[in-house]
Image (cartoon, rainbow, N blue to C red; front, side, top):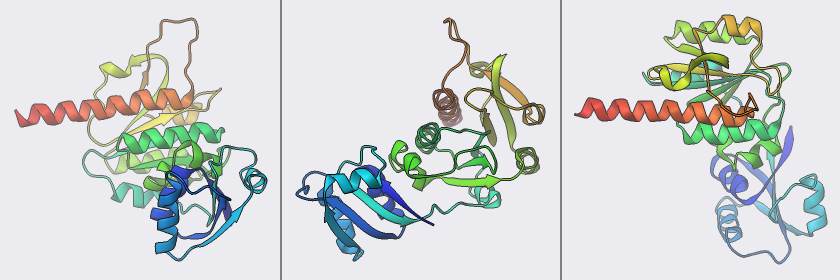
Length: 246
């Protein structure tokens, strides 16, 4: 299935990582990073069509396209085995249970890539898939992290456990994430924006951790919560590496 990817950084990442069928660039726009896009397209002999802003607005469904839209084949998903094989003794995996907002998925993917996570697992049903909004929100980072779609998250968790992963669910009122050892092979489960983690997945986690809060609002946006915990994982790994070198 073909799809449109828009925005300068997302299109640059797509050009670096995947086959682009065609580029649509706003007429007269040849400044800044557009020059880099022209150069990458020329290297790959990609057809470029200059068009007006109205046409680009239609392709991007009114989103901020920054004068550039790429026509590409659908996102290439990985298998769970491929994600596991990419993990060393400090492998890191994110499990997203029914994240419905593409902007949340994009923001999570951007943080996951920055924090050095190996892959993201999403369920087959009740979850947003990788689409143009995800590309845009992730600033193209989704191209640099493996994503797999699993029919049954509990079975996926079991497979991770068989491969020496420790699985942490996130919920309110449990042990603080800062008091938890998050080093080694781990998987972090982030629940649905409104309902959190479902019972069957929660009971299959090895441990439940939470983010302490003092304000009147007792929950965080899913992408915000995921980012906080993922960078704590990175911090702990860096701290452990420093101690080992002493």
